[in-house]
Image 1: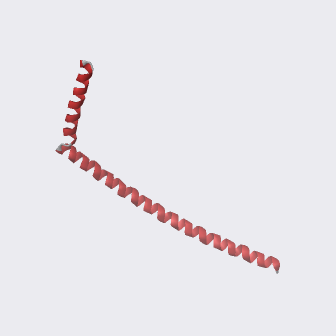
Image 2: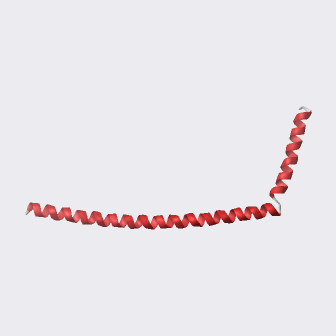
Length: 84
């Protein structure tokens, strides 16, 4: 390997070591904590919205079942009237 490649390798190792120290610092830990807290708040918001959507969909489903049952009863009554 040429001297240039060794210098690039050594620089990468040095940069990586400094990066690890930076990532493990107290300030970085605080930032990770705030980001994680924000993600948890976002998750709660999404789950609340999903619950509301699910409840609305269940209501629509039940209404549709009742509508179909009433329609089937009306069609059944019409068939009986036609045969009489």
